[in-house]
Length: 146
Image (cartoon, rainbow, N blue to C red; front, top):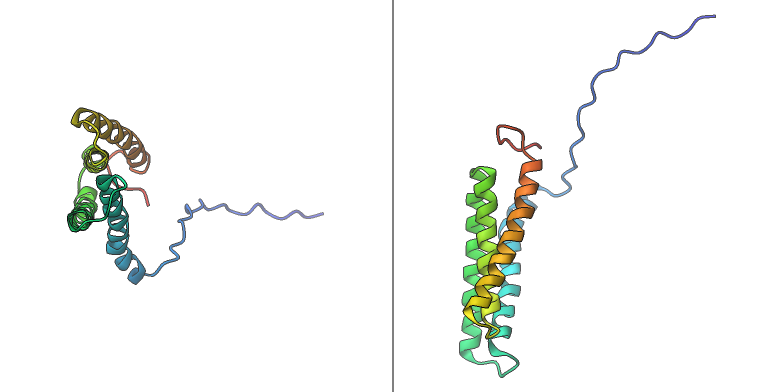
């Protein structure tokens, strides 16, 4: 009785996650996501600032300026951060998140010390999470694993 010869095994190529969106969709999302999140952030800043009072022109101006600054900074950080080593990459996102949250919290009427403390806590938490993500998704030389 004959037996089949064992097949030669080739090393399996690691499977990549399929990219279901086109390049055009990614280009649109690069500016649409920051603008959309910026609009939510601007509304939230304006709502915290007015504290349930009437909507005024200055309140609307604060909301729209907050939207523009938030979206612009997000796009700037998103463009600049990938060119940095993982520690600075994480610090940049942590500083952005901490400052954004601190400003948002300051609009509630809380003291500046409390706002800074809350922003620092959010920034430190963001740093830990983002650094861990970048650390586990890069090789020893700092190249991203795709």
